[in-house]
Length: 303
Image 1 (cartoon, helix red, strand yellow):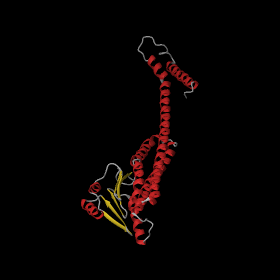
Image 2 (image 1 turned 180 degrees about the vertical axis):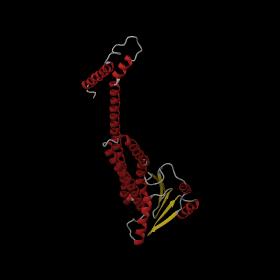
Image 3 (image 1 turned 30 degrees about the horizontal axis):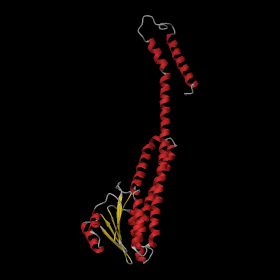
Image 4 (image 1 turned 90 degrees about the vertical axis):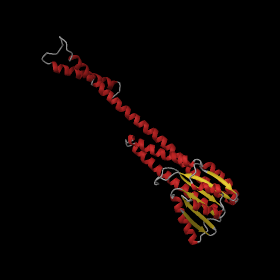
């Protein structure tokens, strides 16, 4: 599907899962190289940046948002010239959809806030994308707070799965955005060549936005590790207490088992058995054994 937006001399072509005919049309219109055109038809495994004359070809992968149907990364291909930008994606990406509304409003009101060349459109798009990732990170931070409260409310066992899910989401974010570092550093150099020295602060601002989001992800990853260790410690302590309690109960019943086994042996002469108060004597012996063990455990501070 192809969507076209214009603002003054600037044109934005947005392609979602483009067909070969759509790619051929924009290739002819904007003079794209054949290799770039082929790249637009299918997703690419790794991000990269290439400069082709006065044109930049940028591929970035962003973590899938939590409310999307797909768990894999979302790829966006950017082809940026002086007065046009082409975006190609293979999934619905909300930040780009919201940006299209802003673009339309600026076009209708004839505002010039989008800048004098297409590099500014790329700048605003990437700010939107990193802002969306940061929003997802804040959602995970709120989830970590909730997990922390539940851990200290005695729900350690239930939080094991919750912590694992948060860990998976943070790991997916890190794997998606960490390759951006080298790409954005190259973008600063190549973008300055294409769009001039005056545009360099905007390129550096994109890099700074990336580092801000990346630092948030790393900080919450460290918080996750601390919570996981705390949760594991509490679980281990609770399990040790259960094992200790069961061991003590087993030890306390030991006199019952020994005395009952001794007096149940089939022998000719059995002391106590057959006397008037044999049952109560055996009960007293068992009780004395239990009381002795109980006193011993208390002395050792095992209880």
